[in-house]
Image 1 (tube, rainbow, N blue to C red):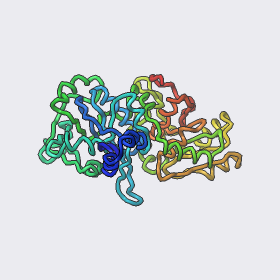
Image 2: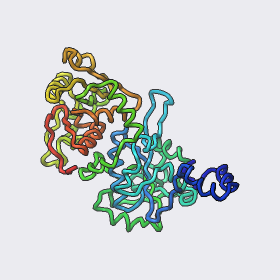
Image 3: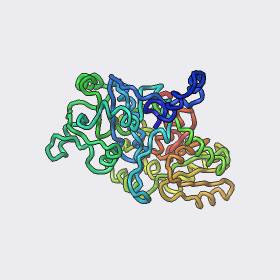
Image 4: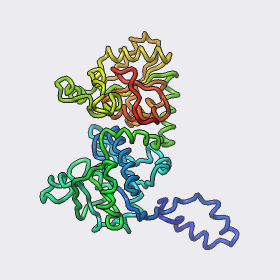
Length: 398
């Protein structure tokens, strides 16, 4: 396997038997093997991306990246957790970060290593069984039988996540009175110096949800992998005609139940990912309406009519977790606009296609939309929301 040091044994034998000139030429002819990962004395940060689906995991990833840099620890980048409970293999899939995004751009911001590589190359010598410490809040440990053990592997997705690496934890370090806020940076460093706590393994992401406003610009370091670019571009070129408007419809039954909390007053303007459109300052937040949370077909048509006309769009791309309204939208535009909804097995294909659209209309409350909005903000592309045609500009200047 690349990265475990040196070429395979068969190549070493060839090199040893070759005459001097061939020995000199051999390194030029062989593909360069990745150097084995070197141990970072400044320590490592590990966590399970165990809250929600991809949109939530991405928001937490940005916060974890910032937290690792604040503590000056290398971030062991975890795989994404994809839930496959309704189709084979009927269990969680763990998708390596590099399958979807490039690792190298992250290193322009801070030191990172794939968790898979950390476990294969560094853990055997530096974090072996018997020395694996879990770190969690005292409140979390209250869920354990002895009230003193971190619930690192309790239930799904926690158990399956660590089991993929055959990790069991040997002891727990509990803490209280601190948070993952940047204001507590020095407290963390003093409480857990890397000389005594080389690997900080947490049950969840050391981050807030939704992503903090100041961490939104870190999205520029999340760059799609070549494989994803190739796949996404092929769909765009074969199915869509530019200009095209991309929309995200979050209108499934679970979402309807969530949005009903707006009706009964249980939820206020700050609801899930809504700060992206109502603003992060609670004192000045815009109202959050039902059209913004759960747009009906009338609102969907209204917003589409506006932006299709403004962009002179020839096609519309619909990403959704439920009914795409493809036929209704085709009829609304009298067949003059091509309407496409893939509903791909890999949801990130939707994200890529929405990110490349000439205009994007998203759901204010959804973290799936929030991923697209951040990416488009990075590249200066226009976006709006159902129920909000002209969202306010956020404080972070991309």
